[in-house]
Length: 319
Image (cartoon, rainbow, N blue to C red; front, side, top):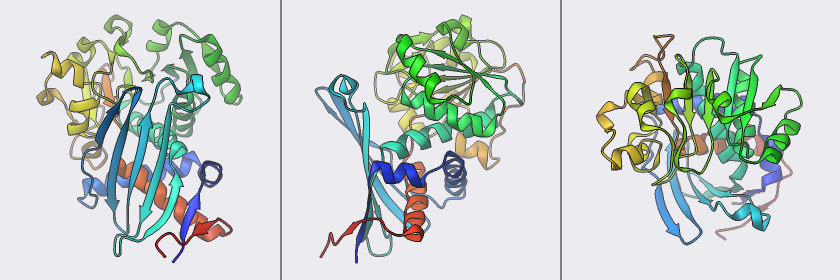
């Protein structure tokens, strides 16, 4: 039996943001119905970065993503985040496909945040602020533009060149270079930095703002002043992961916040176990660490599309 091989170019060709949003939201829903299996991700720290192993299963599919985060990679001409995914038949364990998951990671992260905004942001938001203008900003904007149209983008990065590249990559949208304060004053704010100290102050956040805290995805990372979390309705993708490596991890470590203050999970909101936004002036925060069922849901989509299209290479891996 062949094992399908999908490189980054093939993955990007097969994938659309609209499809990714659809399958990721459905994966959340299946988890809420008890149909998904997913242990917390495992971290392996090395000198210049870290690796994460992320296994999960959904009905009819299983797999594991092996992903790195090496912040210094761009100086070497490499992405900061790279990933490979093994997609398996849950009945036999046979590896049905090996695929580059770098694009999967970027797209499903953007999709998950946009889905959170769908349930937690105010209706008809007009502005979106991105703090950090790397590739993840591109997929965040792409995903939000699918669900909120029209929307204007306020972008901040310590590198003006990065903001310029972001704007050129999205010519169909209005991307404005601005200060971090102006980006933080948007209706929806996405924080996308590798920071280990707060880059967003409480005084900059307006009533009714929804924040997708995405950059804090490993122990010690932090983007928001803890006072924001104390006042906000905080929703996480996975409580174990978030308390260990999400936006809430540093405030918990310092005794400034506790898991008992977390409102609930995005899965609980999607399936109706917890209400989404009910107060137009409340500040809401989605603590996004990235969960493996998102990756497996997208991998299933890509595998089925590749099978249907045909023409992709394969190897007899097992023999």
